[in-house]
Amino acid sequence: MKKRLVNALITVLVMSVFFATPVMAVPESDNVAELEEQKNEMENQAASVQQQLVGLLLQYDALQQDIENQKERVSQAQTELQTAEQKEKDQYEAMKKRIKYIYEAGDSSFLETLISAESFSDLVNKAEYIQNVHSYDREQLKEYVKVKEEVKERKAELEAGQADMEQMSADMGRQQTELQGTLDSMKSQIADFDTQLEAARAEASAQLTQLTEATENMVASAEGQDSSGGQASGGGNNGGTSQPSGGNGGGGGTSKPSTGGGNNKPSGGGSTSTPGNASLGQQIASRACQYVGNPYKYGGTSLTNGADCSGFVMSVHALFGISTPRDSWGQLAGGKAVSYSDMLPGDVIVYSNHVAIYIGGNQIVHASNSAPYPAGGIKISSPPNYRTVLGVRRYW
Image (cartoon, rainbow, N blue to C red; front, side):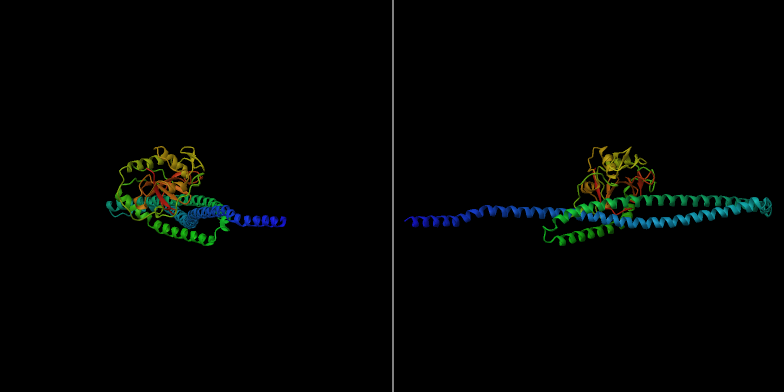
Protein backbone atom coordinates (compact mmCIF):
# COMPACT_ATOMS: atom_id res chain seq x y z
CA MET A 1 0.00 0.00 0.00
CA LYS A 2 2.74 2.36 0.95
CA LYS A 3 4.53 1.51 -2.27
CA ARG A 4 1.41 2.37 -4.31
CA LEU A 5 1.11 5.70 -2.52
CA VAL A 6 4.70 6.59 -3.31
CA ASN A 7 4.20 5.71 -6.97
CA ALA A 8 1.09 7.86 -7.12
CA LEU A 9 2.93 10.83 -5.67
CA ILE A 10 5.73 10.42 -8.18
CA THR A 11 3.20 10.29 -11.01
CA VAL A 12 1.49 13.46 -9.79
CA LEU A 13 4.82 15.32 -9.59
CA VAL A 14 5.83 14.27 -13.09
CA MET A 15 2.49 15.32 -14.54
CA SER A 16 2.65 18.65 -12.76
CA VAL A 17 5.98 19.35 -14.41
CA PHE A 18 4.53 18.69 -17.87
CA PHE A 19 1.51 20.85 -17.24
CA ALA A 20 3.65 23.63 -15.80
CA THR A 21 5.79 23.91 -18.92
CA PRO A 22 3.24 25.89 -21.00
CA VAL A 23 2.90 28.34 -18.13
CA MET A 24 6.68 28.94 -18.23
CA ALA A 25 6.44 29.89 -21.94
CA VAL A 26 4.59 33.15 -21.24
CA PRO A 27 7.56 35.12 -19.89
CA GLU A 28 9.77 33.70 -22.68
CA SER A 29 7.31 35.13 -25.22
CA ASP A 30 7.56 38.50 -23.48
CA ASN A 31 11.35 38.35 -23.74
CA VAL A 32 11.15 37.61 -27.45
CA ALA A 33 8.84 40.58 -28.01
CA GLU A 34 11.13 42.81 -26.00
CA LEU A 35 14.16 41.66 -27.96
CA GLU A 36 12.32 42.23 -31.22
CA GLU A 37 11.42 45.74 -30.12
CA GLN A 38 15.04 46.42 -29.18
CA LYS A 39 16.14 45.17 -32.60
CA ASN A 40 13.68 47.48 -34.33
CA GLU A 41 14.91 50.41 -32.25
CA MET A 42 18.46 49.56 -33.20
CA GLU A 43 17.55 49.41 -36.88
CA ASN A 44 15.74 52.75 -36.66
CA GLN A 45 18.69 54.29 -34.88
CA ALA A 46 21.05 52.90 -37.50
CA ALA A 47 18.86 54.35 -40.26
CA SER A 48 19.01 57.74 -38.55
CA VAL A 49 22.76 57.55 -38.16
CA GLN A 50 23.08 56.49 -41.79
CA GLN A 51 21.09 59.54 -42.84
CA GLN A 52 23.42 61.70 -40.79
CA LEU A 53 26.34 60.00 -42.49
CA VAL A 54 24.90 60.92 -45.89
CA GLY A 55 24.77 64.57 -44.85
CA LEU A 56 28.24 64.46 -43.35
CA LEU A 57 29.75 62.71 -46.38
CA LEU A 58 28.05 65.25 -48.65
CA GLN A 59 29.53 68.20 -46.77
CA TYR A 60 32.91 66.54 -46.42
CA ASP A 61 33.14 65.66 -50.12
CA ALA A 62 31.95 69.14 -51.12
CA LEU A 63 34.61 70.66 -48.90
CA GLN A 64 37.35 68.52 -50.41
CA GLN A 65 36.16 69.50 -53.88
CA ASP A 66 36.17 73.17 -52.90
CA ILE A 67 39.72 72.89 -51.54
CA GLU A 68 40.99 71.42 -54.80
CA ASN A 69 39.27 74.19 -56.78
CA GLN A 70 40.73 76.78 -54.43
CA LYS A 71 44.24 75.41 -54.93
CA GLU A 72 43.83 75.83 -58.67
CA ARG A 73 42.68 79.42 -58.20
CA VAL A 74 45.65 80.21 -55.96
CA SER A 75 48.02 78.76 -58.55
CA GLN A 76 46.35 80.83 -61.28
CA ALA A 77 46.55 83.95 -59.13
CA GLN A 78 50.26 83.32 -58.55
CA THR A 79 50.86 83.14 -62.32
CA GLU A 80 48.85 86.31 -62.89
CA LEU A 81 50.80 88.05 -60.13
CA GLN A 82 54.14 87.15 -61.70
CA THR A 83 52.94 88.35 -65.10
CA ALA A 84 51.67 91.63 -63.64
CA GLU A 85 54.94 92.20 -61.76
CA GLN A 86 56.95 91.68 -64.93
CA LYS A 87 54.70 94.06 -66.88
CA GLU A 88 55.03 96.67 -64.16
CA LYS A 89 58.80 96.30 -64.18
CA ASP A 90 59.07 96.48 -67.97
CA GLN A 91 56.84 99.53 -68.10
CA TYR A 92 58.83 101.28 -65.39
CA GLU A 93 62.11 100.63 -67.19
CA ALA A 94 60.66 101.82 -70.48
CA MET A 95 59.45 105.02 -68.85
CA LYS A 96 62.87 105.67 -67.32
CA LYS A 97 64.49 105.32 -70.72
CA ARG A 98 62.05 107.75 -72.26
CA ILE A 99 62.60 110.27 -69.49
CA LYS A 100 66.36 109.90 -69.89
CA TYR A 101 66.10 110.37 -73.65
CA ILE A 102 63.94 113.47 -73.47
CA TYR A 103 65.32 115.19 -70.36
CA GLU A 104 68.83 113.84 -69.91
CA ALA A 105 69.91 113.06 -73.47
CA GLY A 106 69.32 116.71 -74.10
CA ASP A 107 66.71 119.33 -74.03
CA SER A 108 68.05 120.04 -77.47
CA SER A 109 66.43 116.88 -78.76
CA PHE A 110 63.24 117.98 -77.11
CA LEU A 111 63.63 121.49 -78.56
CA GLU A 112 64.58 120.16 -81.98
CA THR A 113 61.37 118.21 -82.03
CA LEU A 114 59.48 121.41 -81.46
CA ILE A 115 61.66 123.59 -83.75
CA SER A 116 61.25 121.12 -86.58
CA ALA A 117 57.60 122.00 -86.68
CA GLU A 118 56.67 123.33 -90.10
CA SER A 119 53.79 125.41 -88.82
CA PHE A 120 52.19 126.57 -85.63
CA SER A 121 49.60 123.84 -85.99
CA ASP A 122 52.40 121.28 -86.39
CA LEU A 123 54.10 122.74 -83.33
CA VAL A 124 50.95 122.36 -81.26
CA ASN A 125 50.49 118.81 -82.47
CA LYS A 126 54.07 117.83 -81.58
CA ALA A 127 53.86 119.49 -78.17
CA GLU A 128 50.62 117.67 -77.48
CA TYR A 129 52.22 114.43 -78.71
CA ILE A 130 55.14 114.78 -76.27
CA GLN A 131 52.76 115.57 -73.42
CA ASN A 132 50.56 112.63 -74.35
CA VAL A 133 53.57 110.31 -74.39
CA HIS A 134 54.43 111.29 -70.84
CA SER A 135 50.80 111.00 -69.75
CA TYR A 136 50.55 107.60 -71.46
CA ASP A 137 53.64 106.36 -69.63
CA ARG A 138 52.33 107.56 -66.28
CA GLU A 139 48.88 106.10 -66.84
CA GLN A 140 50.28 102.78 -68.01
CA LEU A 141 52.54 102.59 -64.98
CA LYS A 142 49.63 103.36 -62.68
CA GLU A 143 47.56 100.72 -64.41
CA TYR A 144 50.19 98.03 -64.04
CA VAL A 145 50.77 98.90 -60.40
CA LYS A 146 47.03 98.69 -59.88
CA VAL A 147 46.90 95.29 -61.58
CA LYS A 148 49.75 94.03 -59.44
CA GLU A 149 48.11 95.18 -56.22
CA GLU A 150 44.77 93.71 -57.23
CA VAL A 151 46.32 90.34 -57.98
CA LYS A 152 48.22 90.44 -54.68
CA GLU A 153 44.97 91.04 -52.83
CA ARG A 154 43.29 88.26 -54.74
CA LYS A 155 46.11 85.85 -53.95
CA ALA A 156 45.98 86.74 -50.24
CA GLU A 157 42.21 86.27 -50.26
CA LEU A 158 42.42 82.89 -51.95
CA GLU A 159 45.20 81.65 -49.67
CA ALA A 160 43.18 82.68 -46.62
CA GLY A 161 40.15 80.87 -48.01
CA GLN A 162 42.18 77.77 -48.70
CA ALA A 163 43.63 77.74 -45.17
CA ASP A 164 40.13 78.20 -43.78
CA MET A 165 38.71 75.32 -45.78
CA GLU A 166 41.63 73.06 -44.89
CA GLN A 167 40.92 73.71 -41.21
CA MET A 168 37.24 72.94 -41.74
CA SER A 169 38.24 69.80 -43.58
CA ALA A 170 40.20 68.65 -40.56
CA ASP A 171 37.18 69.39 -38.33
CA MET A 172 34.94 67.50 -40.71
CA GLY A 173 37.32 64.57 -40.65
CA ARG A 174 37.04 64.37 -36.87
CA GLN A 175 33.25 64.47 -37.08
CA GLN A 176 33.30 61.74 -39.69
CA THR A 177 35.52 59.60 -37.46
CA GLU A 178 33.12 59.99 -34.55
CA LEU A 179 30.10 59.08 -36.65
CA GLN A 180 31.96 56.15 -38.17
CA GLY A 181 32.65 54.88 -34.67
CA THR A 182 28.94 54.92 -33.94
CA LEU A 183 28.24 52.97 -37.10
CA ASP A 184 30.97 50.45 -36.31
CA SER A 185 29.40 49.76 -32.94
CA MET A 186 26.17 48.81 -34.73
CA LYS A 187 27.76 46.83 -37.50
CA SER A 188 27.43 43.48 -35.74
CA GLN A 189 23.75 44.09 -35.04
CA ILE A 190 22.63 44.94 -38.60
CA ALA A 191 22.92 42.23 -41.19
CA ASP A 192 23.11 44.48 -44.27
CA PHE A 193 25.29 47.18 -42.70
CA ASP A 194 27.86 47.28 -45.51
CA THR A 195 25.10 47.58 -48.08
CA GLN A 196 23.55 50.50 -46.19
CA LEU A 197 26.92 52.23 -45.88
CA GLU A 198 27.58 51.94 -49.60
CA ALA A 199 24.08 53.25 -50.27
CA ALA A 200 24.84 56.29 -48.09
CA ARG A 201 28.04 56.96 -50.01
CA ALA A 202 26.26 56.62 -53.33
CA GLU A 203 23.48 58.99 -52.20
CA ALA A 204 26.00 61.58 -50.98
CA SER A 205 27.91 61.34 -54.26
CA ALA A 206 24.73 61.78 -56.31
CA GLN A 207 23.67 64.81 -54.28
CA LEU A 208 27.12 66.40 -54.66
CA THR A 209 26.96 65.90 -58.44
CA GLN A 210 23.57 67.61 -58.57
CA LEU A 211 24.82 70.48 -56.41
CA THR A 212 27.94 70.92 -58.52
CA GLU A 213 25.95 71.03 -61.74
CA ALA A 214 23.54 73.57 -60.24
CA THR A 215 26.42 75.70 -58.95
CA GLU A 216 28.05 75.99 -62.36
CA ASN A 217 25.23 78.23 -63.64
CA MET A 218 24.77 80.31 -60.52
CA VAL A 219 26.72 83.43 -61.49
CA ALA A 220 24.82 83.87 -64.75
CA SER A 221 21.55 83.33 -62.87
CA ALA A 222 22.43 85.93 -60.25
CA GLU A 223 23.59 88.47 -62.83
CA GLY A 224 20.35 88.09 -64.78
CA GLN A 225 18.35 88.45 -61.59
CA ASP A 226 20.22 91.58 -60.49
CA SER A 227 19.84 93.28 -63.88
CA SER A 228 16.07 92.74 -63.97
CA GLY A 229 15.11 92.69 -60.32
CA GLY A 230 16.67 95.91 -59.07
CA GLN A 231 18.70 94.23 -56.38
CA ALA A 232 21.23 95.89 -54.15
CA SER A 233 24.53 96.69 -55.75
CA GLY A 234 27.97 97.08 -54.32
CA GLY A 235 31.36 97.84 -55.76
CA GLY A 236 33.67 95.92 -53.47
CA ASN A 237 35.02 92.52 -54.42
CA ASN A 238 36.64 90.12 -52.00
CA GLY A 239 36.84 92.35 -49.04
CA GLY A 240 35.43 95.68 -50.13
CA THR A 241 33.31 97.85 -47.92
CA SER A 242 30.51 98.60 -50.34
CA GLN A 243 27.00 98.69 -48.98
CA PRO A 244 23.86 97.40 -50.68
CA SER A 245 21.44 100.10 -51.70
CA GLY A 246 18.30 100.03 -49.85
CA GLY A 247 32.85 77.12 -37.59
CA ASN A 248 34.92 78.26 -39.32
CA GLY A 249 31.35 77.77 -39.66
CA GLY A 250 29.20 77.57 -36.76
CA GLY A 251 29.92 76.91 -33.21
CA GLY A 252 28.70 74.32 -30.99
CA GLY A 253 25.49 72.84 -32.36
CA THR A 254 24.77 69.24 -33.18
CA SER A 255 21.61 69.49 -35.24
CA LYS A 256 21.75 67.89 -38.68
CA PRO A 257 19.75 68.88 -41.74
CA SER A 258 17.70 66.35 -43.63
CA THR A 259 19.37 65.25 -46.81
CA GLY A 260 16.52 63.24 -48.18
CA GLY A 261 14.62 65.98 -49.98
CA GLY A 262 15.52 68.11 -52.94
CA ASN A 263 14.73 71.41 -51.27
CA ASN A 264 18.27 71.73 -49.95
CA LYS A 265 19.58 72.05 -53.49
CA PRO A 266 19.88 75.33 -55.36
CA SER A 267 17.91 75.38 -58.55
CA GLY A 268 18.13 77.29 -61.76
CA GLY A 269 14.38 77.49 -62.08
CA GLY A 270 11.55 78.74 -59.96
CA SER A 271 9.29 81.67 -59.53
CA THR A 272 10.64 85.16 -60.10
CA SER A 273 7.98 86.87 -58.01
CA THR A 274 9.21 89.12 -55.21
CA PRO A 275 7.72 88.59 -51.73
CA GLY A 276 5.87 91.47 -50.15
CA ASN A 277 8.37 91.76 -47.29
CA ALA A 278 11.46 91.88 -49.53
CA SER A 279 12.35 95.23 -47.95
CA LEU A 280 13.03 93.40 -44.68
CA GLY A 281 15.58 91.20 -46.41
CA GLN A 282 17.20 94.33 -47.83
CA GLN A 283 17.37 95.83 -44.36
CA ILE A 284 19.06 92.68 -43.05
CA ALA A 285 21.64 92.84 -45.85
CA SER A 286 22.32 96.55 -45.28
CA ARG A 287 22.66 96.11 -41.54
CA ALA A 288 25.04 93.16 -41.98
CA CYS A 289 27.33 95.31 -44.13
CA GLN A 290 27.72 97.83 -41.31
CA TYR A 291 29.98 95.35 -39.51
CA VAL A 292 32.43 94.84 -42.39
CA GLY A 293 35.99 95.08 -41.08
CA ASN A 294 35.23 93.65 -37.63
CA PRO A 295 37.07 90.50 -36.52
CA TYR A 296 36.25 86.84 -36.86
CA LYS A 297 36.21 84.79 -33.66
CA TYR A 298 35.47 81.08 -33.55
CA GLY A 299 32.45 80.43 -31.34
CA GLY A 300 31.77 84.17 -31.10
CA THR A 301 28.47 85.97 -31.61
CA SER A 302 29.52 89.62 -31.13
CA LEU A 303 29.11 91.75 -34.23
CA THR A 304 31.75 94.17 -32.98
CA ASN A 305 34.21 92.09 -30.95
CA GLY A 306 34.16 88.92 -33.02
CA ALA A 307 31.80 86.30 -34.44
CA ASP A 308 32.10 83.14 -36.48
CA CYS A 309 30.07 82.65 -39.64
CA SER A 310 26.90 81.21 -38.11
CA GLY A 311 27.18 83.49 -35.07
CA PHE A 312 27.31 86.47 -37.44
CA VAL A 313 24.19 85.31 -39.31
CA MET A 314 22.36 84.58 -36.06
CA SER A 315 23.25 87.92 -34.46
CA VAL A 316 22.33 90.01 -37.51
CA HIS A 317 18.92 88.31 -37.73
CA ALA A 318 18.43 88.74 -33.98
CA LEU A 319 18.58 92.53 -34.50
CA PHE A 320 15.30 92.15 -36.39
CA GLY A 321 13.71 89.79 -33.88
CA ILE A 322 14.38 86.73 -36.07
CA SER A 323 15.62 83.53 -34.47
CA THR A 324 18.01 81.27 -36.38
CA PRO A 325 19.85 78.10 -35.34
CA ARG A 326 23.34 78.60 -33.89
CA ASP A 327 25.32 76.36 -36.24
CA SER A 328 25.60 76.07 -40.01
CA TRP A 329 24.04 72.59 -40.07
CA GLY A 330 21.00 73.91 -38.27
CA GLN A 331 20.77 76.97 -40.51
CA LEU A 332 20.69 74.69 -43.54
CA ALA A 333 17.79 72.76 -41.99
CA GLY A 334 15.82 75.81 -40.81
CA GLY A 335 14.04 78.64 -42.55
CA LYS A 336 12.41 78.37 -45.97
CA ALA A 337 14.21 76.74 -48.88
CA VAL A 338 14.80 79.17 -51.77
CA SER A 339 16.16 78.40 -55.23
CA TYR A 340 19.30 80.22 -56.24
CA SER A 341 17.50 82.03 -59.05
CA ASP A 342 14.97 83.42 -56.53
CA MET A 343 17.60 84.49 -54.00
CA LEU A 344 17.18 87.99 -52.58
CA PRO A 345 19.26 90.24 -50.30
CA GLY A 346 19.01 88.96 -46.74
CA ASP A 347 18.86 85.28 -47.69
CA VAL A 348 21.32 82.88 -46.06
CA ILE A 349 23.65 80.90 -48.33
CA VAL A 350 24.93 77.66 -46.83
CA TYR A 351 28.19 76.00 -47.84
CA SER A 352 30.03 73.06 -46.33
CA ASN A 353 30.45 74.12 -42.69
CA HIS A 354 30.06 77.81 -43.62
CA VAL A 355 27.27 80.36 -44.10
CA ALA A 356 26.93 83.87 -45.54
CA ILE A 357 24.28 86.54 -46.14
CA TYR A 358 23.49 87.51 -49.73
CA ILE A 359 23.50 91.28 -50.21
CA GLY A 360 22.69 91.55 -53.93
CA GLY A 361 25.00 92.60 -56.72
CA ASN A 362 26.36 89.03 -56.90
CA GLN A 363 27.97 89.53 -53.47
CA ILE A 364 27.86 88.09 -49.97
CA VAL A 365 28.85 89.39 -46.55
CA HIS A 366 30.22 86.86 -44.08
CA ALA A 367 32.51 86.24 -41.13
CA SER A 368 35.15 84.50 -43.20
CA ASN A 369 38.16 83.40 -41.16
CA SER A 370 40.56 84.50 -38.41
CA ALA A 371 43.00 86.32 -40.70
CA PRO A 372 43.07 90.13 -40.29
CA TYR A 373 40.74 92.14 -42.51
CA PRO A 374 40.56 92.31 -45.53
CA ALA A 375 41.91 88.75 -45.93
CA GLY A 376 39.70 87.61 -43.08
CA GLY A 377 37.19 88.93 -40.58
CA ILE A 378 33.74 90.16 -41.58
CA LYS A 379 33.96 91.11 -45.23
CA ILE A 380 32.22 91.25 -48.59
CA SER A 381 33.12 88.61 -51.17
CA SER A 382 32.07 87.70 -54.69
CA PRO A 383 30.73 85.62 -56.34
CA PRO A 384 28.30 83.89 -53.98
CA ASN A 385 29.17 80.48 -55.44
CA TYR A 386 32.90 80.76 -54.73
CA ARG A 387 32.28 77.42 -53.03
CA THR A 388 29.75 74.66 -53.60
CA VAL A 389 26.37 75.96 -52.43
CA LEU A 390 24.47 73.36 -50.41
CA GLY A 391 21.33 75.44 -50.06
CA VAL A 392 19.74 78.88 -49.74
CA ARG A 393 17.47 79.64 -46.78
CA ARG A 394 15.17 82.55 -45.99
CA TYR A 395 14.38 83.47 -42.38
CA TRP A 396 12.56 86.78 -42.92
